[in-house]
Image 1 (tube, rainbow, N blue to C red):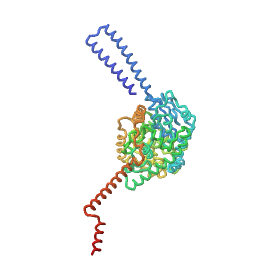
Image 2: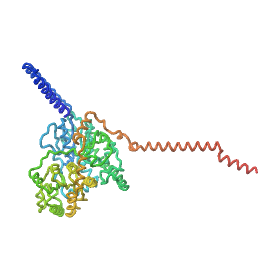
Image 3: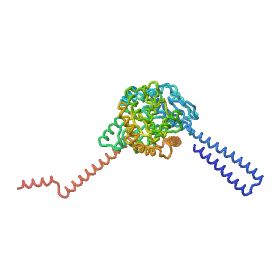
Image 4: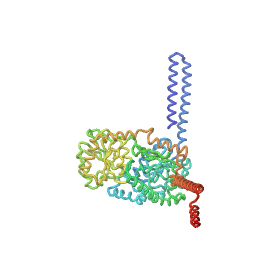
Length: 571
């Protein structure tokens, strides 16, 4: 991209300079017919040389491209969205990318090759019912169940023929230069870096996980950095700090313990022996984290931990004509309502759906766009001010001038899109980090939250809607937050690509040296112990010397007592 842009600039500059020079000569009558012909021939030669130079520069861009293996075996669509934009961006940049995924591209993309796992695991797009959502909320509390579903089951995909082909016969012409994979609950795939002997770039879909701080050498002060699983702000009370420390250390220990069983897949498929799953994290050269300081607070980050929140954001999806017309005519405002790509709103109990209907009807003439996967399963009685579709181009809807609010389950990507577009939210968390995401935005006064979907009533929902519709502070706050989120030296996607290329050029140069230290060395406990020991020894020496000096000057108490006894006997 750099080479091509420079070549175009040079080409246009040469062309403009040439015509400017010739026009001056012509106006001054310094050109005769022969000169014009000769200069025309020279011009054609110059243009050919420039064209060759231009082609060389473009070829140089392709030659310098890397071959990148993207491994994304988790079958969650919401996790894939950011990874997809990243891999497509690398392909457009001129790198050759091979992508292991459950979501192959519908149309071929230059430099992009799908290694499809589609059909190897049950899809989780538009198939989570109310019952499944409740089960998932419970399983995420039970860490063992969660790490089995999102970890062991995903590691078992290594038996897939296409992954086996990658392991046994990786391409050699050219070989891979970089591996990119997502860190979720399946660190077994980090073994690809050691197997192929290339740097690993790891993506993190949420706030940097508590258990990643130790293995990355990232400073993590629990006095003001809330745990991934807490809803605290960065200004915690004493009791909150106590709870924060206990929660973070417990979760990290459990995750490391539960995922350690994945070493059997590492040994079986790669014949790599490591003492603990944490050893594989040492191969990670770069972490790309889906956060931003404006949304998630000020935190210290080591050099190879880069915040790229919003890497998926793009504005090129047009609205369907009927949706465009509906929003254009929503002069009193419109509310957008979706529970993301996986959850089917229409499967929730009749009593809950009726509360939504009653509230939506009450806020008319304000209109509502509601994402419903299967309209035929939706409870009858939909209010007239509500439009349903199985899919909406979400950013385009949120960016419309008449969109005034967003009812969301609190997913990381959806809430970022809402902030990006400057739309206040009503959060109804269902599972996972959604409670934490929503509470974060409540603390910033850009959202109103419910405890859960079972807490929704017509009265409460109507009150929440009126807050974000009629209280100007929500709109003003989200506009300020949006400006902070968007104001960057370059986009999240370009930032990601820059650092990936940096690793490709320079290798593993960003890792923190802290990963080579034991925990007591990192916390300087051995140094403090040494200093205390030196002080104690010094004090003991001083006391010893003072005692000896006192005895020398004034005599020892023992000698005085002995002399006194002898004197009494003589008397």
